[in-house]
Length: 261
Image (cartoon, rainbow, N blue to C red; front, side, top):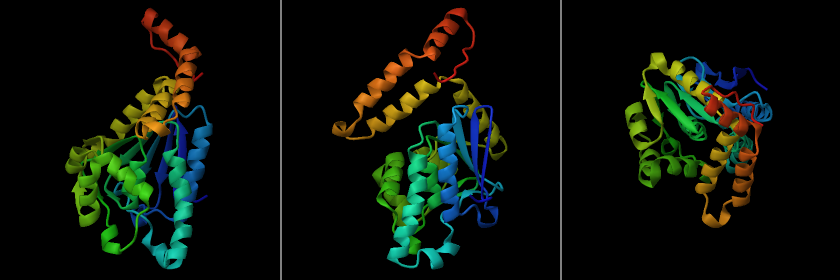
């Protein structure tokens, strides 16, 4: 573990903070490993209903990979492959997370920061946030799964624009092309994120996890969809105590308290 990833939780919300502000929260290998461990912990903790990722310092979500490590850890194809293996484990953990994940983006969101944010279900950016992928200016190669995520968000044409030009998009353009869900003033960013996270945390966890699983299947080719998994999760919802509680609360005009079972 590393102190460059801060892990907290309260009121059903988990927080993962990239804590490397001196380097604009550039992501090092030990940070990828720590995020892997953090999301494994939150996955297993039923008290955590939703997770928020953010960057420390107010100036950056994440300014990509920590280039200071490249000379020691990515100076040739063999080292790059090992680097990719470790970072991929973290990306796979986050990408496969079953609970809702919100990216709270302030300041710079560059390169690997964009790819990390793309793993979230919902991205909320401050009006001062800036997005770009400078791979073409460094000569490095992004893995297929990362490019696939960007294409899934903004479509092939805008993905090519981002990657071919290495231009930076402001928050308004990022929202217009679908890179982020919402752009808000910097001084209300955390309030907006906390309000959304709290709203999600109060809703039925089994239903939310079902929807996240279903959306993942929609994105697959029809022949590869896990429809048995979908049907099993639907049945779990209808057989749950939460569903009984939700029906009763609706009839009694009260707010239900869901327990995820």
